[in-house]
Length: 564
Image (tube, rainbow, N blue to C red):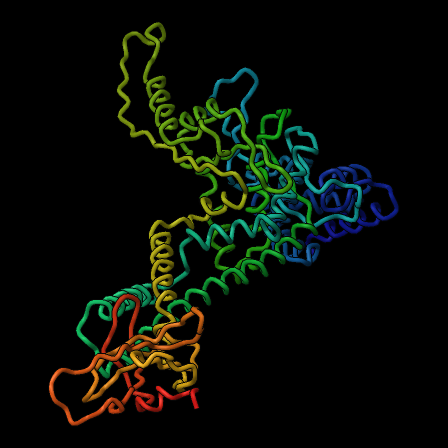
C-alpha cells in the first residue's frame, strides 16, 4: 500500500490509452505517460507519498525492488524478464526519478551487453569508437497496432534497414535458416554426448574396425563365422542407431523450441539502443541487429530454450560472450549476408582491444592473414607517440596483442555454428570415418545376409546339357553367387564349379562341369558320381571354407533332367 500512487498512475495510463487521450501504449510509452500524469494528474496526496519515498536512498531502493518483484509480474503476466529493465531505464529519464540515486545506474544503459556493431563514423578510417555496443530489448506488444515491430533508440535508421534483422531472426528460429543451421551442425557440429558415452561410442567404432580386419585378414573362423558376423552387424546397427537417435532428438527439440521462440518474437516488439545519435546509411548493421534480437529473446524468456540443447548453448553463449564479438554485414530477410566495406572495420576491431571474434560476410578481405596484418599495423600505430607532444618520455608497449579470429558467413545459419562454438574438427573426422565404415558395411551387407539369413536351398531344374562331355547343374535360385557345386566320382575327375547366371542361347542359373575321365583302371562306370550343392561363405574380397551342403544329385539324374 506504500506505492498505491504508482498503481493509480498505471490505471490512468491504460484508461487514457483506451479512450485515445495518449497515443502510445501504456508499457512502451511509460516515460511520457508518467511525466504527463505527474505534472497534471497526480493529487497532492500522491505527490507527498512520492516525495516521502524519494527522501532517502534506501526508500528509493525499496521502491525499485517493489517495482521489480511485485508490480512487473502483475503488469506483465507473460513473464518477460526484460520489462523491469526497460521500465526502470525509461522512468530514470523523467522527474522525480531523474534525481534519485537509486536510478543512476539505469539512466545511461539497460545493463545489457551483446554482439557489437562496427559502424564507421563519417570520414573514419577505422577507430576504436566505431565498434559500438547495441542493447536489445524484447517487450510485449502493446495494443497499438500501428507501432513498428522494431524500434531504434538514440540513433536513426530507415525501417527497411531494421526490418530484415527481425525477419532473418524468425527464419533462423523456424524457417530456412534453421534448416541450414541444423544441416551444418549435423555435418560438423559437436554432439551433446557425456564423456562416458563418447568413449563408449569411440570404442565401439574401433571394435567394428577390428572385426572387419579380422574377417578380411584373420584366421579362418570356421564355425565361429556366424557369431562373428552377427556381432559385426549388430554393433554397426547399434552405433548408427545411437547416432541417428541423438541427431534426431536434438534436431526435433531445436525445431519445436524454435517454433515456440518464433511465436514469442512475433508477439513482441524489439527495441535497439545504440548511443551516439548516428543516422545510419546502408544496412551493414543488420547482421548484429539480428543477433542482438536473438539474445534479447533468451534474456526475456530464459526458460523456453532449456528444452533444446542447441538453442540453450547458442543463445546462452550469445548472451554471456557476445560482448567479445563484433559483426558486420548487410542482412536480407531470408538470412543471407552480403558483402560490405571491410578493411577499416577490421582495423577498428584491432584497435578496440576488447574484440576477439569478428563475424563477416564471405569475401576475399575476410581472411585470418589480413586480420593479423591489420592487428600488427594497429599495434605499431599505437606505439608511435609523436615526440612533439612528450619529448622527454619514451613508452614501451609490452602488452600482448589479441589476435582477431574471423568467421566468414554467407548465411545467418552458418553464423549460428560459429557463435555457439559447435564446430568440431573431431566430429568432422568422426563423420567421415562413420561414412567410410558404413560404405564398407553396405558393400559387405549381402555377404553378411547370406550367412546370418541364408537364402533357401535351391533345387535342380532344367535345362540339362545337350553335350555328353559336359554336365549342367541348373538351379532355381535368385542368389547364384552364394552357392557352388562339387562333383565327387570314382570315374570322373572331382571338380568344384561356381553357380552363375548365363544369358546365352539357353539362359539359366547354372554351374557347368566338363567331364574328364580319371586315368587308370576303375570298376566304376560313367554313371558313377554324386553332385553336391554347397553354400558359399565370404565377406567382401575373402572366401571362407564352404558351408553346409544343401543338395545331393546323381550324375544320371542331372544328365537326363528335362530330356525324358
